[in-house]
Length: 451
Ligand code: SAH
Ligand code: SF4
Ligand code: F3S
Image 1: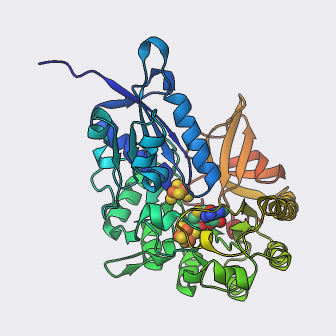
Image 2: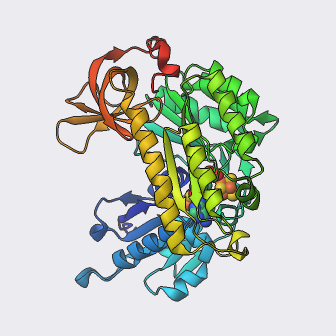
Image 3: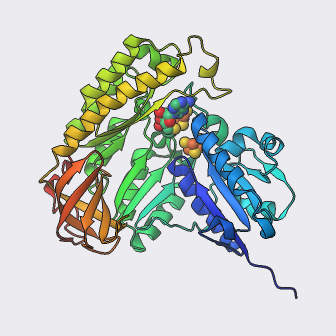
């Protein structure tokens, strides 16, 4: 029998956490088929880039990377290259026509075929499926943090967004599978479990909705912290807020993308809520969980956006006081409704408006984070820092914490005093380790410990 040559792959991941989760499945699929992962692209037989199509910039960066890495390496020739993920789904075989260096385009629902694809001739494998990579054992590299996909696709068709086109229709993963994965992560010592979906609030499987799923996940997660992204404000219900508030291990934090502070822009975006309805949800959250950490996404320069609309967005950032905001300038995505809308805002104006929002949010973030100095907060130790001798951790509110020295191994929970911070990263002093039973009680305030 002929020996099968060892095959090695190198992979880089762009985009949202959904891509991170998918890349763990890609590793699971390839490694079960005898491939091994290498850290140096020059040593790899195959180069995989898992791409994001949400903004033009993200797309260009990923394609630039694969054209650079796919070039010939002298005597060793050229590696096999695969563009995976959302850009592959968007462009399909056009990628192969445009870039001779790209061998394969593989969409997000086609990874099961990767072992055969990488061995075969140039190919485009796209089109949506209705599976959830059942039976694939993901290879995780983020201990003690972990992601569990609970749904794939999106049906919302926000007018600016390409995700429903590249990810297909929304489908929820059976609750039993989600719970089994959560329980196995908890028993393997993972300290944080993040449930993933483009719109987790519309999860629905076999009669189970998201609030019920979250309650059951909280039970299965034991001593681990539970988070979830992303919540659509329209679908955030009182029932979900009550479940969050009643589950001790569900982090008091929520990413609630608002996109704009102007009712006319929100309507043109097809978001399905008004500024007033959004603010009412924020009040509901803060009443149920005082001190809850809130973050958001906002877009500057959507078609038709006026100076007055932008002022409303700026005022909303001030009014809510988000702990953190991801701010973007609008990017046309071909095929979406917004790309055909009247009144495109000049690119220079989009950028200028983005900078105005960034200045406002920067001041809010700094103010809130300075207010944390001297607070005692629980922290999950996540691993070594970028400087020798430092250790990193995360608060329940997802802020990065830096310790001098090593308070405890990755996966343990500690109580830490925040010393200083500027923005999202804080320096902290180790106080003591937290046992499982006191992990949530020890800090009465963990509900609001971050604020
Ligand atoms: N399903 C999630 C994530 C969507 S993509 C959600 O609904 O929040 C993440 C963010 O990218 C969006 O919230 C939006 O703010 C931004 N985004 C999406 N399409 C964009 C576009 N065409 N231009 C600029 N930003 C965009
Ligand atoms: Fe895009 Fe809207 Fe779906 Fe989020 S909810 S992925 S912004 S279409
Ligand atoms: Fe990007 Fe695809 Fe996620 S377009 S944001 S990687 S679903």
